[in-house]
Length: 144
View (cartoon, rainbow, N blue to C red):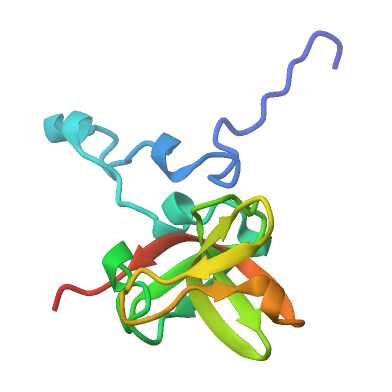
């Protein structure tokens, strides 16, 4: 037993790698010449969800944010861990009503601003029950 070396398997699974780092394999052992130029598939969870425990999906209802490119029926990817900053689109609950609006704060108060001229800005100070549910990171909508 002295002087013997034991080697483990070279492949330890894909869990430690991202999808981009895993190479393609061919059952014959030889890769095709085109494999060098082949792109891996796109994993939307890997690309769009940066903090999985703090992220949820939300379906937009209404047209209050259409000028921001967020339309009725779009799927919003909302991240609760992102910092609330002026100008960000957020999901908030205001007196029991869920709203998607742009957050704006000045020296004296904060507002929820719609990106549609048919709606008026909402002064948050006028309401007692305001909670932010997260910052909208992405909006996905169908072109069909």
